[in-house]
Image 1 (tube, rainbow, N blue to C red):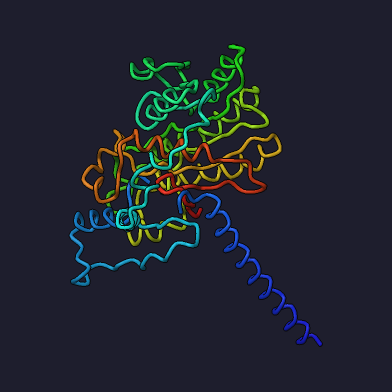
Image 2: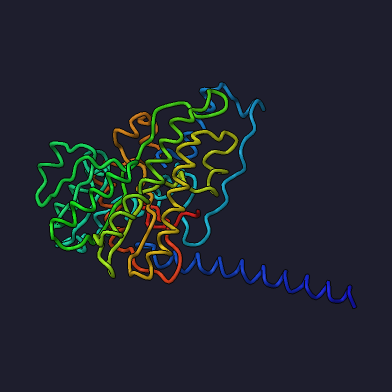
Length: 356
């Protein structure tokens, strides 16, 4: 009797696991279909970066001096391709308008009259987002440590300086000052401020724990501080508001076996972005009852000051000017909605999902 019971329990567990796996696959297909348009700063992709590092270390795969990583598995239905070089080459070969010509599908209508707060709005992709929002009729609330002439020149801009996202005091001051204006609450909060230092961060050349912690503090805890301060002060529209974290495909734990195969490295960047994604997922659960939607967005590979050190692979990995990258991001922000569960992790290059 005991043996029969054990067999029965084993069968039930096996059946449950199969049903769970099927449910996950169906959810991926459904979510992918919902998010796909017309159908990853990651600041670097897998193929070119792997070639770059192998060349630097003098590794020759053909001679057997190195171990080639496992081949990338085809993405699940609704999910984007993990290999950046292959992804761009495939999109180019099939003439994918979502990737090659964002203007052909772009819908900026949601920005007209909206109040959009952007952290790190004084330069890089943050400034590009601010310019695009201003151009489309939004009121831009630029939160940054120091303003810039480009940000100050925008129409319909409100600038709040001294916003250091590593300081809870600074984030609470931002919320108080914003509330004191007496203006309507924010329609969208874009947690964009980030940090990616040009430093070695691997076992062979040495780890930089101070820089690792700084990346974690800015990229992962920063969005939490900003969002917490704004929501607690009633500065985010509820219901109807959106919180968007600009993270990176570099924060996908699953994709490290493809994009960092047999090389690891960049611990601070990848760990910080993975934590930022977790921040978004948890905020989505807590803010859902208040009617505030949350999403994690990978802006794609953009030609900015932060990625200048990878200029030699911009072309092969499909890096775009920040103005194009901003449209991709804004297009996806417009499509973010309140879900019954979860927080989507979206590649703004093609509108498809990235696995956590």
